[in-house]
Every structure is written in C-alpha cells, then in structure tokens.
Image (spheres, helix red, strand yellow):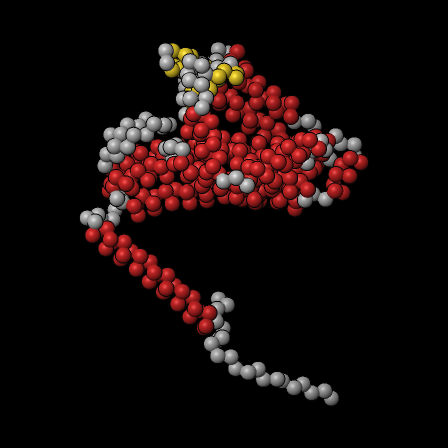
Length: 396
C-alpha cells in the first residue's frame, strides 16, 4: 500500500487572493498609487489656480470667443485679425494638418524608393543612397529646416523667378503652381475619378476571390488604370472640363495659381527629406527580413523581378514595415511643431501667440495637447487597421 504525505505550505501574509486575480497586498498598492495620483493632480490644480488668481486670471475657455488680433499670413480658410481666438487656432490646426498629410504622402513615396535603391546591385547607387541616409539621419531636424528656409530666401526675385516646369515658378516668395478652379466641372471630374478608383478596387476583390477559388488571376493594372482615368476622360469629352488657373507674372508679383509660401515649402521639404531617410531604412530592413528562400522560389517559377517584389516580397515585408512606419508618421506630425523656428503659422505657433496675449497658458496648452493626441490616435488607428488587414492575409 502506498501512502501520500501532504506537505503543509507556510502561511502567506498579505497574499490572500481576491476576485479578479488581485491579492490584498497588490490591491493596497494600487489604491496607494491612485491616491498619490489624485493628490498630485489636486496639488497641481490648487497651485495653478492660486498662481492664476495672483495674476488676475481665471481658468476657463471663454477667451476663445474674444477677438484675437493675431495676423496670420497663411490660411486655408478666410481669416482676419478681427476674428476670434477660436478661429485663429482653427487656422493653425488646418495649417498643421496640411503639412502633415502632404508630408506623409511624399515621404512614403520617397522613402520606399530610397529603401529599394539601398538594396540595388549597383554599388554606386547603393553607396550614394547610403551616404545620403546617414547624413540626413544624423543631422538635427531644426538645422535642416533652417537650411531649407535659407535656401528659399536665396532664390531669385519674382521677376527672375526660376521656371523648371511649365506653370511652375520658384522665387523668394515661394512656389507658384497651377491650380484647378473650384467649380462644378472640377467636382464632376473628381467624382468620376473616385468612381474609377472604386471600380478598380472591386475588380481587385473579384480577381482575388477568383485566385482563391481557381488559382488563376487575370491582370488588373491596365483595366484599373483604364477605369481610373477613363471615367474622367469621358466626362471631359462630354464637356465637363476642369478649368486650370495658371500663374502669370503681373507687375511685381504673380497672379493666379496656387501659392506655396517659403515657410511652408521649407517645412515640407525638411520634414519629407528627414523622415524619408528613416522610412528608407525601415523598408530596407523589412525587405531583408524576408527569407531568401522566397526569392529563390519566385525565381524558380520564372517570375520577373518586378512581380517578385510586388507580389511575393513586399506583402511579407509589410508585416515588419508597418509598425515602425506608423511611428515615423507620428514623428512627422509632431515634428511639424518645429515650424515656429522658420515662421510658419502652425498650431503651436498660433498657440504661443495666444498664450502671450491672453495669459491662459494652461487652457491653450491643453487644447493643442488634445489636438496632437487626437491626430496621433487617428493615425495609429488607421495604421493598426491596415496592419490587421495585412496580418489576416498570412492566416488565410
């Protein structure tokens, strides 16, 4: 017969399990931290109120409805110094969003091209791109912004403006480019292009389903491009032709077209050049993370180099590329706050002026902190959604 001997465990004080997986000691620690955070917040609030009262200020956001009197030289929407602080901060926010959205699009394209060139078999191209990336990544962004702004200010005057492309002029007053007039024809043109893009997307879905079911897939690039540009072309043949506003020299300045100020252009170029260097390394490392057996298998099937990269390598590399790419998008958006160095009226620049005029530092800082937090959360949510879509392809 066998007998079992039970070993009594020593009693443990303070480790009594509670519902939810907590112990009494852990619960007390959590409560202590909560009390400390609440106490710190209360101290900060009381101290801020006392300091504001000593300066004759009262906490609140009522100042947003007062006239700002802030001159803003660049605005997407109509604005005058007689408008309110609310309107002025909105102008700064739109300026920030404009440079962030355009910068993200441009640095993505440039970063991918540089990343692919970094892996080129041509030693000269590979070395030049590698040197460019190392110099840009190891130079402070503020210094680069000041450099590009100084370059813009050294351009010729308006009358001697550079004309690198038809309708494009570069001068000390910035860049002038052709613009589409906002009329009914433009809206119909954009609607037709959107319809073509939706048709291309539906075609891609159908061919992917066909490939899963039969293993065969018909080409989609040429039919997709035909829809994307064919629908607008049909609209133009029907008489809905968008009007192009071309810039023309009139006196001492240009008239017509779209103006990109020296500050906006320098900020955009600086952010794109700086961020694209980091994206290039992300793309390079993502591609190199794909096992070489994938390349060999694709070559064995007789696929050309372009299709190997587009259909085999990049879809697998995206799972490595997207998370750090999201961080670079967030960095670009937050780095746009350095626009104050070169005088571009972004949200932080307008907010600083508002603080100097009103003294409502806590309120204004809380506004642009909330705005940057919201922008970051939206960007992260979109990239996480796309990352989840890419991850699903692996499971299928």
